[in-house]
Image (cartoon, rainbow, N blue to C red):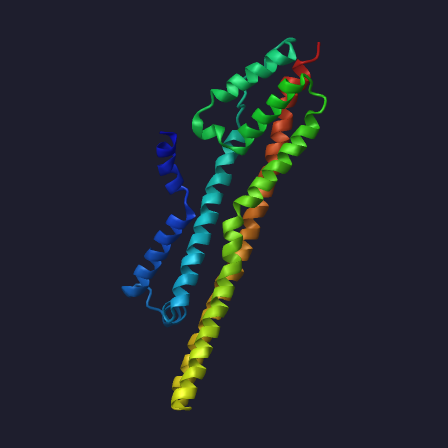
Length: 252
């Protein structure tokens, strides 16, 4: 049952679906004449590889857009006290941890999936298991490294797309040049203008691959920098919040 409930969420978070929709919308505008620029027509519609490059670029942008939404969604949690008010007076460490875990479990489902609540829960569970907060700083550093690795892996699809687009463009150029030489072999030199046009069409796929890959790399670097800053903010907020509850409150 839970898999069926998660299916709509998985669909909404799929960059392949959103990228395909964006690509279809773009080519709808091109083919119905709304985007009738000769430059657009030349570099986006003259070769099957150009359609594939555009689709990959759309999927990549969709992946980054979903990451942007995820990053923006982490901000509100940092401006709120997820653990509620700070209790006053001394309480046993185990009782404090149990109360904090209960507060985290009572959070609404959309908020429990964020990096910040997960970081807090993992840190509190660590203190509860150990019965001590002495190595909490080391645990927080470890959890930060785990989240950084998870975030890096979440861009795997986009990194593959960045690599694949120029390679795909170069493949289209090679195929086009092979076709030109094949025509030369069977038909001779023929019309030099037609020959030049065929070569230009073949080179257009590589040009398109480079045109979309370069801004894609810049956008990727910008997003990863934003996520690194968010990770730092999460680490600082988690350490400060746990200071208020565990380190201070557990002292007799």
